[in-house]
Length: 235
Image (tube, rainbow, N blue to C red; front, side):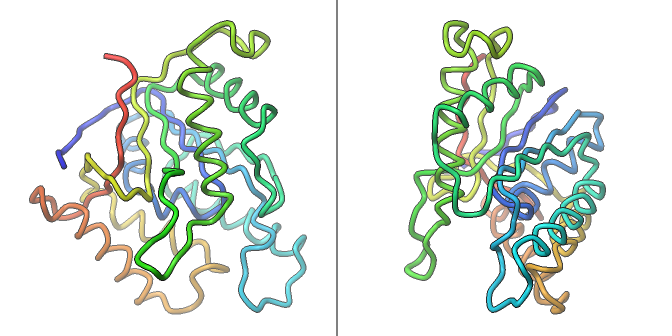
């Protein structure tokens, strides 16, 4: 594990559900936005099924989560939220999804792309990584490496663009950590903005977010950090 300091001009975070980016990379996104980076967030799914024991209809839940997402993104300083509104559970690493991702990457031209590590499936014998996370992650990998950078892939999607860094969260093989001490308070607020997911136990959620960030930074002497599996695609 090593410390990584990046100051991209444009960054793109690609996650499946409305709260995924805040939990995985909210500190980094907030820090970059505060430094003047144009941070874009793509949420693939509509969040319509993300509830345990709820009597809310899928349409009502999607509306609630859309509002929560806008609030969290505003807190983090995200320039634009891109919502593709795929129903929860229906994401597939398809040619259509890869093509849309390539078009977005070529249009925004980010130096850094953030997203979920699709190779991480089982966590501690108590959690199976959501299918939407895995399918989003695989589609993102395929779109960024190599399709977006090679003009003969999806030639109708715009001029080719080579992403410099790919940072994968929720990974079993983190190799870099980014300091988020200056943005941890905002990250906590952004996570709590997703009230439909966190509930009313504000203190427990806040403590959990902070403790995970402390754990990610401990080995490097950082008070708070977010860890990723990194791929440097260009020098």
